[in-house]
Every structure is written in structure tokens, then in C-alpha cells.
Length: 190
Image (cartoon, rainbow, N blue to C red; front, top):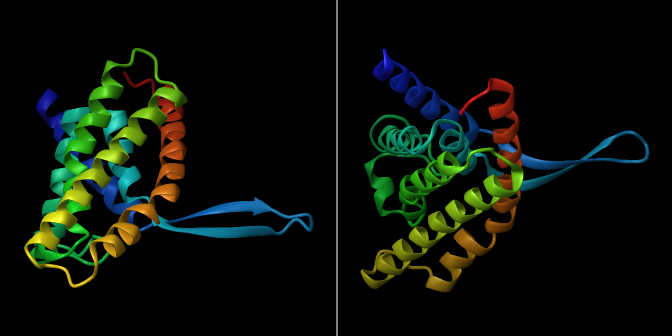
């Protein structure tokens, strides 16, 4: 029964990542005339889906979900931001996807060590995990540039893939940390 429960959690984690990857993110501000002003963040909730799974289910389920997400995107469905298939390995975005695996484990491991979840700890864990994703993506860009895979300059690739999306991804880390703390309290998860 215990193994079945872990399998269900892993499948749920993968589905959560896939669903959140399809959701655009934005900031909604109320205006004086009671209309809402929407500012798009030019990011989706893909990374935060990995973090949410890891924070709620732990390092093993988070890592299994991240690996499963990569396998589904490479071999079955075009679920990544730019599509999918095995050819996606040769794109400069793939290094960031590879970063999901150690980031999921780190985020889940740190959350599991915390006796009482709170927004500050979880925000730190997701921020650290986000940095892991970007470091691995950065290294992938460097290796790709060394081997001549990219025609763009390394600076442009780092700017487009790390420095521009990082602030909005960081903001989403705080949001997903808050959601994780609330869900753990509502669902009474340990």
C-alpha cells in the first residue's frame, strides 16, 4: 500500500507540473474605478510546479516527478515551453530543465528537515532551488557555446534565459511558498 501511495503522489506531481506549465503568470492590481489592471510576468508556473511538488511531497517524489516530466517532454508530449522531443536536448533551454532534478531534490530535502513550515524558510528553499536551476542552465550554455551549438553570443543567451526571467520567477517562488505553507496546514501534511 505504501508503494502505491508514493506512485500516486509521483503521478500527481507530474500532472501538477504539466498543468502549472500551461498557466501564464501575472500580477493583478485593483484600480480606483474597480477595474483590474493585469501586468503579465512573461513566465509560467512550470518551475513552481516542481517546487510545489517537492515542498508538499518531499525530495524523492519531487525528483521522480521532475525526471518524469523531462521524460514525457522528451519522448511523448511537447510540454516544454518551446515544445518537446529528443531534439530539445540541443536547445539552450534544456540545461535549465536539467536543473529541475537537483532543484527538486534540494527543495524537498530542505522542506523535509523543517519541523514547522513557514513562508520565510520555504521562500529561502525555493530561491536556493531556483538558483540551482539557473546555475545548471548557465553551465549548459557555456558547454554548448564551447562545442559550437549556439550562434548567439553567450552574454545574450544568459541575459535572455537567466537575468530577464529571474525576477519574475523569484516573485513566483514567494507565491508558491505561501501556497505550500497554506496547503500543508489545510491538508495537515507532515
